[in-house]
Image 1 (cartoon, rainbow over the protein chains, first blue to last red):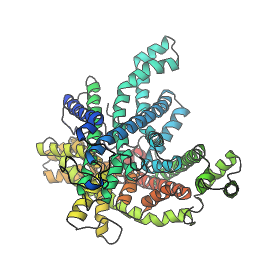
Image 2 (tube, chains in turn cyan, yellow; image 1 turned 180 degrees about the vertical axis):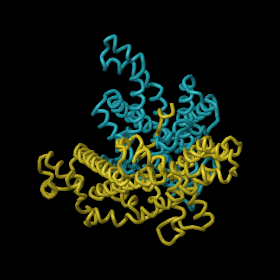
Image 3 (tube, each protein chain N blue to C red; image 1 turned 60 degrees about the horizontal axis):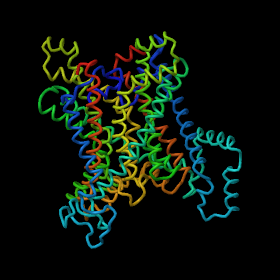
Image 4 (cartoon, rainbow over the protein chains, first blue to last red; image 1 turned 120 degrees about the vertical axis):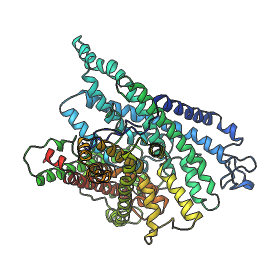
Length: 291
Length: 337
């Protein structure tokens, strides 16, 4: 995340290279994380040896490593490890769908704002500046209050809240790409704006979009867990990390270990996405930019 | 590549419309213009969000049905529709709704029948106190830790520190809150984990809320200190025999701190997102907790009043930062005023 946090304050002129990891280091660590996430997503239930929804009232609030329960059990005797693993099957689809929605909206608006000049650009860029300053979680909560809960409503809400981050980056990149020689050349050869955007500009934006998606996915995963934690995300009883953390808060005194499973799952997934995003960013910018 | 993936907010001033000001106008006029600009943004934001909520509410179902529940009779529904003006044409409803929102008139709570706006304003002090504590904590810790990390970033222990800050950026704030509760309230029984009574009840919520923003602010401060260390004026000071303490505190830190304040101001909205979670986690009687309860109870007037009041707060803070930053940094003052 070294080069990503520039603040256009006019006060900061450069960026500290915080992580001196080389690009392969970031990518390799990210890929290891990806393997862990994929394994737990696909085979987590088998690894746990229990079904995530199976109650066992004789085995309630067991501490870790008892009776084969790796991470213990919750207040209904459900295996925590199996539920953490099942949480991947909830969070990752929500995160992917929400990221796609925000990517589509954000890219469209960013492209329109970046390609056009004059009043369209100034109106849209001002609107983006306004939209990004509002607390996204407050907006998400208000929208959920109106549209309700569930998988689709949650993904849509998160996508609707996150589009501005995409739009601002696509906006800046499109403006740069528009200055490139190959765009001028295409125009001189008589290509229409739409055709230039669809072929050249979108191709030029591809690395940016991939990297941004990784970062936004990480942010939205945290947002989803937060909303579920507030009881406004996943339906009650659904094995999502936010729900499990909310449960663990209720049982803080009887079963303090319950939070570590879901918390670790959130952190691993978020770190994986951020590392992959950073690694790819450095991979694609290695020619143009001396790290 | 540096500005390609900037995930942060737009900073006050330099790249906004206000930056292109005429030469020779006074600072007072600059401040007035900034205020006016922020006020315009506020109106646009409140209208946009009201529009979004208005149409989402009507697309997803019948508001009267939502209010009364599935068991209501057709007569009751009609009465509710005419009471709330839901029987009028959509466009009339919409225009009325937006005008009410701009005038900050949201009607009464559907649960307690109190005035929605005064319900929100009543909870405001608790939220602002907590947010203020988190802002102060952010500034103090970021300046100390960020200054230490950025002063000699190439040393191994500071490299490790910077990496730890990077990792901590991936830990959600509510996880940090839960861990704090577990250590200080459950194990050590030192601090209260619920409610707002006495100074000690501030400690855990303030640290939790601060942690939402802290890694980012530390990294920016460290980067600014590192930058400032490479400046010509630092070399000049060194060459003229200044001690490293003098260099750090007289030349480097004042420059770095301006950026820290700007970031905290710009990210104040993000901090308020954290307030929702922090207030729920610690049963802190603020606007965030009330908003969550209102959403659960489908109490739309309170939800809308909260959204509008939060918008006013965010833009007020940004306007304040707009005005404070040039006062703190003479370079920006001469650039703009």
